[in-house]
Image 1 (spheres, rainbow, N blue to C red):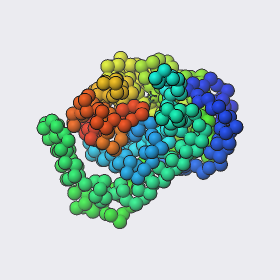
Image 2: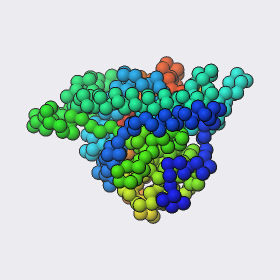
Image 3: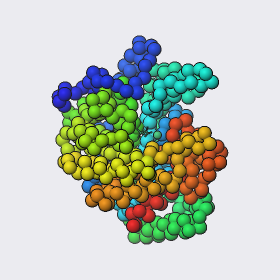
Length: 450
Ligand code: PEP
Ligand code: MN
């Protein structure tokens, strides 16, 4: 098929994996029709702005921070939780800006990160077979809500709309303004949770130097409150995995430049389980003018990676594709160099982003978790392997929350396996909590200094 054969629904002629089967097709049709009439959530101009920023990441002029929940729930669409997530992403990005002396592109896994791929469509609980939980836009985690319900697709749209609206409101009202005390009170980062005195000293040194730099800007007036400068607000883009193609199709329309945009979010990615070259997801993604991500794990053959880039980036647009690599701390040495060399043999200019979460998942005390040390090790290796291969790590992709959950082991607060049950909330993958997320930003700041 050529680009001219592509249509927002041409994916329907391809084999689909992770599909959701609805009993009531009439109901589904009505919901899809309604979604098609509802207004977009983002604009093509915003998408082009992000694309430009990602091109700068690919050219090593910026760093990408992408983060948020594994599975966003409708319940997370609440004032406190949205504020906490925005705050942790902003604080992480401030540390990264300082550490890397580079501007940061911020993309939240938010306002639509509802659908989840699962290893099995059904599961047996106490001898009874249920649909697996597929994310809030498909079914509920409660056992009596497991049947896929098309109405949840509308719920996804309205919760995305409310979330993105509140993020926009916060940013327009100065939440990211460096004068905003709640977001930026660096003195309040007391670092008391950092158990190891040596690490606390290192972090404190970074915070102090950051504080000095901000003071200096204030003194010279570079942060004039009344100036609409970079100090007063920031861009925050939204993203989710493009899994439910029937849903995504409804937001796909021709822009003023005659290209097709998905206006339901700024950035979408293809998951590691749905990236088959001849499959429905790759077919849908190849028609989008949005910047898109591709998850790359150990099962990706280098030649396959080249093929997927040729399909998704036929015009060799710098930064159009973000390769989100997720191997595991013990596998990255084996696979990343080959993938870097494969891409280097082509004309594709990609963003290389490290997802140090998905290859490091394990089960401890019956709970799905990740060890902070393994996460930090994969990230550190990604930096080094790129440098050794004359390539550049352009970003990091984390599953995190601003809330004080106990889902990942370790970090500067030294959460133990026994602490996991204290506040284990996720229905899907374990997230870094607020402190552990800042730990990741501090460790990247340290890699930048190396
Ligand atoms: C995810 O990002 O939550 C996910 C399912 O990742 P992957 O596709 O890399 O397994
Ligand atoms: Mn996940």
